[in-house]
Length: 426
Image (cartoon, rainbow, N blue to C red; front, side):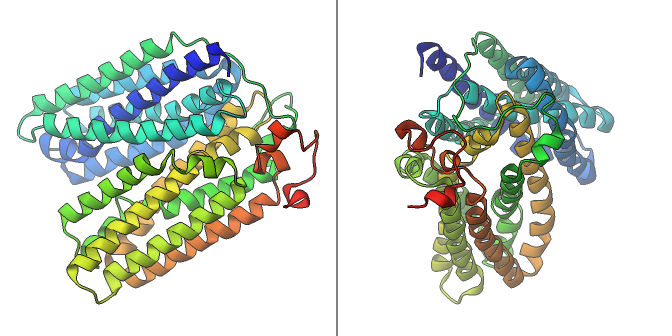
């Protein structure tokens, strides 16, 4: 990595931390703010949360093309301004229409930040440093979310509208501060993989859909986000409270265990991940999450003591955190390596779109199922976890050797246009 790339990467990591801090600062309190503080009711609050997902689904297909044509930095700056205006207006909005429009601007801005920042990481990293860069991004995102939620919780007072206005105003200022920091970034261009496919003239969605490995990765990504992230605050928490009898304080402990595992394990597993086949790392995550669902099954369906059930439930969240730590330096770099040169923005946006779809569908399916049918819920998502392993191994057969084992690019074992990874299996 050159000095210019290192300087740019440091600013990008600051950007990731600040964007996550701003997200954690307000999102946990949106429902209370809209439904109770503004007195707009539970239905309007539900619509606000839905607007976040809908706005993301609308803007992400266009964000990818904009990143390809204009570059990630201008798109990121526009997203930050939109998010800042949305946050400020949300803190001042008193009626349902104003709240929904403000939420749409904030949700759209936040959705576009993710692929823009990911593309900047790709452009400012080399093949050797990319996994570590994405691991650092994930670490800082979780740290920012946790600190933002903690500070935001101490600032808000459900009896005072002014405390929420202050909260959203601070969030708006954070996004503007981030825009100022990112405007100073000078974007270098990193060398591409030796066997990356050539870029087409238009770089259209048709070309992306013609990339079988990318399509399979998107299917795998949907299952990953649906079976894990889409259950954290919906199905799994409902299952824990209703079936396992977990207290709200124990639920908070479980969420803390998830974050703590990520913080502790992120860089501990990095060397292992960097020297392992990407497809097998993802397959291993599926098996780890299968064990997590077995622990969840014991917590809610076993006949142990309350203490044992609580310990098993907390272990479930911790095991999910271990899998997340393994995925962060694996999946995002793989998306980048599958993209033709200059198309990382569109591929990152496509994968972000898949993630948003999974996060929208996951709670809608998991919430009612976890609360009312605990046994089918656990069995269903245990099966999804095993499916992750199967899909990951199938994906490995579509990857070139360097895409599945990126360290080969450094040893020059594989020539340009090498055979699929299975042909050089060790």
